[in-house]
Image 1 (tube, rainbow over the protein chains, first blue to last red):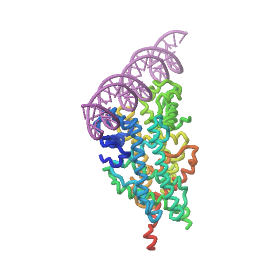
Image 2: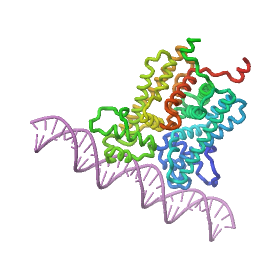
Image 3: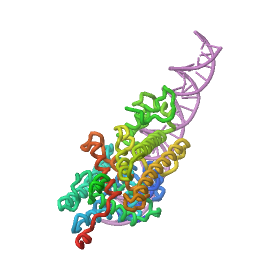
Length: 220
Length: 220
DNA sequence: TACCGAATTGAACTCAACTCAGTTCAGGCC
DNA sequence: GGCCTGAACTGAGTTGAGTTCAATTCGGTA
């Protein structure tokens, strides 16, 4: 029910926008965007359905806002985590770990983001939705650029083997967010354990050399 | 427009089921499930909207069928690709590569599968949808088990370092399917190039040892 | 007290998914 | 040929979640 990560622009003190966002994160995260009734969100907040339209132009507008705020937080967390890493490897570990330093609500937000990322592909008919969508795309590009910069830094310094930085970034990003497909708070795996495992996976993938194959091993 | 990968049970020769599935794969893949109108699928096939309900109980039932067939193909392709690999490493490469030996239509199918995978989490109210959903879950579990078996084999033979096989399987699977989030046929990256890159990433992740850290490197 | 804008509402509307009652089509059988 | 059966199909109508809108309440300010 914490709403710090969901407050955005300055709203009036009576504004229910953060409460709506929090309720929507719960609903969208548990049931999925499509399956949750917009009116259910209103019920949880304790207002009529139509009051929602005072804050959001549509259900999709609310979803896009949630996604944008999640992306904004991801971008900020990455920069904060990596800004004073002495080496590229340290930055790699810090950037990957930052992806998992999240509250349960932010985990839900990431699940929502990843489940509905395809929504960003096609234009929206309404203006405010389109604005949010473009902001999301900009943030996605920025997050991707963060990783590209980091990987290029490692390649320049000789810490990482040479790879196409763009595809490597997308792959790392895909690896890190794939967790939200199956991770549930309170499941068999704790988030710190997942984090450690995926940070190590990331490092092996980015920094590791291909192990010797059967053939080369036999030849040596 | 090829429909081999979409034919399932024995239908009458006049059946438009495969044509509907093919049209739905196009629409859902390009626009997304939510954004495509069910009637648009009917138009592409050249039948009235209501004729769709002769073959599918609902739009969601059609989607779940597409997902099930995609999963069935993935499972079969993995088994075929890995069945006579001499080593676990060879099986790892073959299994990963099999995920990308796909026609453009199958690529779309995988994109759809991955974009709507959250649909499998919650029960469906209608019976036929629920049947398809449970079949999908069974296939997902089977695909995951395929990878667990492969990774356990590698650990037993000493080819792979010891990792929790379940989380490692999920991670590999997440890594491999994350490609469908951004890959487009005819984009800057060719599918064989993507395949090669991701197979190598997979191998480094599963087989690789953690490279020496700054500290241990300095100590040696 | 009067006023203003933010917040809220009930009733009505839209539109895509879906239902239903009935029609057409293709092939098997006498 | 005519008849029958079941698969394939249709147009008209229903449902319901999302949305609009005109009207109302609320909270603070002059």
